[in-house]
Length: 500
Image 1: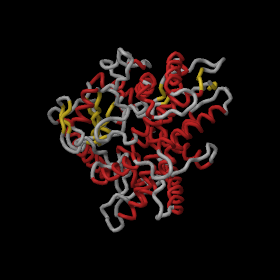
Image 2: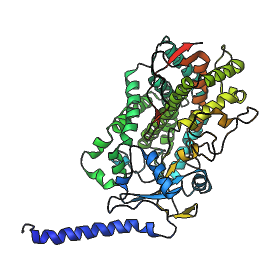
Image 3: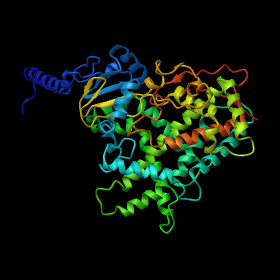
């Protein structure tokens, strides 16, 4: 066998270059289809990877929207995506054509994290029978959470009392509330999935919460985005461990907790929690290869619920408390309503919502202003669709810019300011707005929305029932500026919680 020489290397390089160019042109062909959404010119092989700021996608998309309009296209390596902006386009895509936009892009990284083809969980599951089966199961379990001795509302109100006790332990000194909010919300998810609560200093619980937050930083990075766009890179030895270490460690911890549940499960007793109910379904599905109820899927469903349920609600509550110390007049009005409707003697209940329009307006405005998941989760078209006159082919990824709806200047009077009156009519009655989409819309809207709404109302009212919150003296006034990523968080701040 002869060695490659300069004479042979030249033609080989040209041949490889031509091959890659042809592959690139093949993947770009839909950009030349009539009425395909406009977008920036992609580079051969890379697409628009170098033109997209993965650390601040929202600002990047806002700039591109000003150039190309509400519906524009990108090429991420060889993956075509379309970004949807504005209320009209969002409704057209997610609501009017919900069946056709309910799919998720393939996530080959899951297989490299140890999941088989029959384990997709629920957040990123492809649209089909398995997803419908799991969504039905999760929704019914949330709705009927009385399998054990307590209802889900009881779990939340009791945890709210534990959270208030932890705030009281700060004795009015300045502190950051984030860790305590994480623990309280984490315990609600633990009660749902494992029928138990953890002490706030439990080492394994703290590790679980830390890993949940690490996953957010992990997925916001450039390397994971490149791996999702160019899945062939997953075959590079050790790359998955380097790109997703927290995700692997998080799932290993979930495996431990599921194993403990399995060992203590008494089949003669009603299920204590979602894990027990899932294990019962696994038993029923034995011998049915089509069922999505299997051990692999159990760990992924629990992982999805833990990850999605903890970081989103605790971040929203962190926004709520920040906005209360920045707007003491709003805080006082909420407390006045709490005193009139609930008083100090009993715990808040979900039934109180109908009598507390201002508090409801504040909770909704916190979600609108905080805008914590500005781009939602990616969708994919399952057939050719039309949005705002543009044709989007089957198999195209969709980014839904929810922030463009929550901050739409044509809908909201003060889109970039905290203004609870957005949700009140002239008579002071609570009004829900069509452009309120923090949980997305259509078939893939957040299945945890009822639980999140319950937690936000009960935790928020319980905290303001017992404490007045203020900026610590001799500290600069905190900012309501956003720290951008997959999840938008408030800038770090401290507060003082003074018992009322």
